[in-house]
Amino acid sequence: MVVVLALAVGVVLLSRDDAPELAGSTPPGRAQLVDPGDIVSGGPPPDGIPPVDRPRFQAVGEVDWLARAEPVAMVELDGQAKAYPLQILVWHEIVNDQVGGVPVAVTYCPLCNTAISFHRPVIDGATSFGTSGKLYKSNLVMYDRATKSLWPQALGQAVTGALTGRQLGRVTTQLVAFTDFRTAFPDARVLSRDTGHQRPYGQNPYPLYDRDGSQPFLFDGRPDGRLPAVARVLGLSAGGRHLAVPYPRLAGRAQHGVAAANLELAGTPLLVVWRSGATSALDRRSIAGSRDVGAAAAFSRQVGGWTLTFHAPAGTSPTARPAAAGTSSAGRRPGRWPAPGWRRPRRWTRSGSTGPPSTPTPPSGQVPERHPNTRGCCRLRARASGTAATLGRSGGTGLGRSRPRAGGCCAVGASDLALRRHDPFHLCRRPPCRPLPAAAV
Image (cartoon, helix red, strand yellow):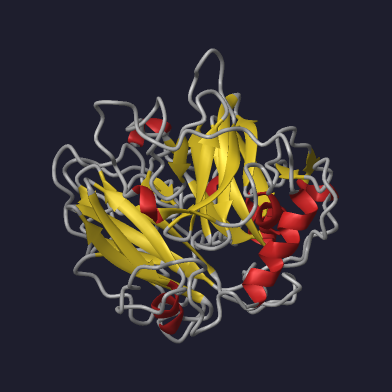
């Protein structure tokens, strides 16, 4: 009932007489991708929940209206990083923007807690997206302003109109605490409250929506019984396979607020990292005062011919102690690697003539040109049959890769997980180390 009342207030405030006529069917000769009966009115008219079409931004250091633990949607593209606070997205759901000069739509569905960004299609110029006022299985349905086709956010595919069947390219998006974004990207920009609309930013219009026992709004199907209907998960896709990683299970295995899960999806080795310290945007009326649900992201564990396994050491704060397979880390002081008394070589050779005494000889053709400086940069430990180069990065619903940058922090090689510029969880706690060259990717 609380959710229904909140939506009804939105209808009164945002009703428009000039709502666009949306495409409600598929073109002749094309098969229907979804049951039209599953697309239902959520209450507001098209753009009754107004997207942000002219976004303005503040320097991250100038933002004094966000609490440290408040969640933001982080998007990084072509060297530029931006944060979109959920206290704004919960009222607008779509931001038509450019990141790194690339037209994107940053979207958030409060009813699903899904933050997904897309490349905006080019139709006589980059089109923009609006909110249709409709829902597909309790998920936001967008429409493009060029053809008025309908696009369920979770699908990222047009299901009606001239663009039926077209799939949007996705842009990696992560939900993280504002303080972690600010630490990882001190020169980044944050979406401003100056949106052109008057809304009580910082307040949640869906109070208690994500509490245990809640049911999705206007969902007529049968919820999957394996998890509570509104349970938080990290969604991953690879090779046509999909995986949901529940936040509560990650939190339950956390050591000192950090959990690492080594998984595999469609043959792709994955690392999922969960970190406490991010509040829910759908709990209490005040987002800043809501409960801590943490944040999660995914990385590829496969680096060339190497597959790494990560874990947070029990009994201590997570630390960087990468150890080669077959070696023992017993007796090593937390935060220090290699063991005292061993001098780190400047290079590893293909013959394996230098290196820790107990380190197996890496296979020919898979040895980095330089041995990375791995002394205490990353708060996770990695094990492998030698050393590693670079972790690919991903988040949200897709997998991605990126290269190390000069000045980054290296751990188990120049890992994106530990690069200060690419570390939304602030796992790196020491000054930047010397990274491996980009060619090591």
